[in-house]
Length: 459
Image (cartoon, rainbow, N blue to C red; front, top):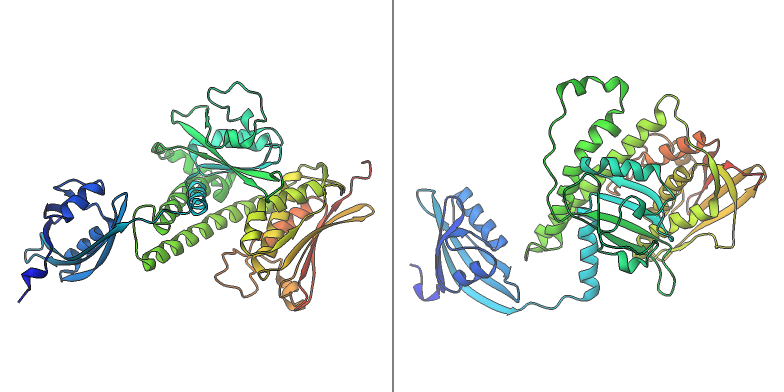
């Protein structure tokens, strides 16, 4: 027989997991967590426990946690479904409340940046002068502005996203622009930007990541007319048809999973947080695969060519190192780009060289051990200009080198987040620019990837 003296509070829910009645202190917790009485159960863990008990049809009991703004509550709750299946009876057997620990500022800032990255509908890479280097967009609403920014690489980002109520001439200090509201032509939503610097303590930023965010939901997009589906022979199937449709929902899945993983929606057991992290990782891999498949279509299309220009490979290498500097520091890898005093002029497309170097440096960071070095070196070879990315990884055997530039080749690796297309695309880009991409390595001796493009002999 149930010991009535051990029950601190009783409550009842209906078939829709709405809390119909509740005794104190559960009633107050429901209200402090933003719920109503009667109303949908507000504490996430309690709502999930009730949902499972009702769905499975048998009694469940476990500890649940909730945050009501100032305190963290831990309670042992029994949930027993009613015989008619139309609701549950809840019994609270223990209750402990303690002040919520104050989060460290660095951890809070890291979580804010992580959330912003996954909520952003457009992102861009900027150089130290806040000029555009690359643009990525997953919103049909922003497709036109993204195309304009893509065509205007090298210009200030504020040329395309003017600041609201700011008359000062650019470039303003980046700290004044972080969080600033901007105007987006053709959009009725309000927008703001987040600027994330690539920097080391004591140095000026080497570049920036720009995120475009809106606190208002995106408008529902109307499906394309039926006639638009018969033109695949004239279009890029992935890049123009599939990627724009899939990127936004996948990005939302990632954002929601990261919100759950970082417990922004409330306390959560570690196991559920880990599940959410796995969902976010899988979503990121899907986005990476979409980007790679779109690039694959481009480089394999008939008549593909690049737009050669006179560039400084030293500048491109430093930009790539600045973009990936945070990732390197997370693994305690020392990334050594060319010095500002070094110059090596070449004839190639800036954006494509940057894309290749980001892939090579990213791979070096991914497959190098912690507390190691990755070097980016320049080499003048007469009518050829070379950028060499060298690491202290495990090295690559001759057999692996023979196949590593093939499509979908991952050298037997699994679970590392790669798609097996990066090196294949990079070599195709190098060839299209009149150059080459090769590797020099041996097991246990690290790897040297060599990007070679035509030198600018008139510089």
